[in-house]
Image 1 (cartoon, rainbow, N blue to C red):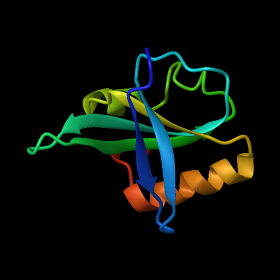
Image 2 (cartoon, rainbow, N blue to C red):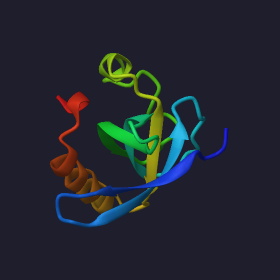
Image 3 (spheres, one colour):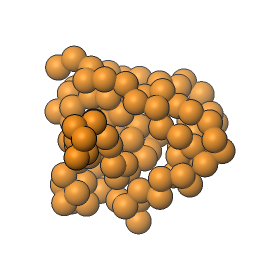
Amino acid sequence: MAKISSIVLLGASGKDYLFHVWDTEHPHENVAAVYAITRRYQDDAGTPNHRVLYIGQTDNLSTEFDNHPKADCLSLHQANSVCTYFDDNVDSRQAVEQDLIKYYNPVCMG
């Protein structure tokens, strides 16, 4: 399946991060990335929107969703998208992950 769209997620620092949006069924490559699992929906005006449910980072996106530890919460909140921000540097990924978590306080992080 092809990329659905792109989305800008905002960090608590005020920095913008451009993410690629994929359906949750999309197979991912072995790449390092920060990811946000979201519920994609249209608001009352018909504008696409996302509710950020979980934010993580990994050095291998291809295996990150096999038996995800928050699968039950993500299912409960109707997760239907994975948004990816590619970054090879682990320190940078961890900083981006924390910046986004502080801003969105995702429901499935607890």
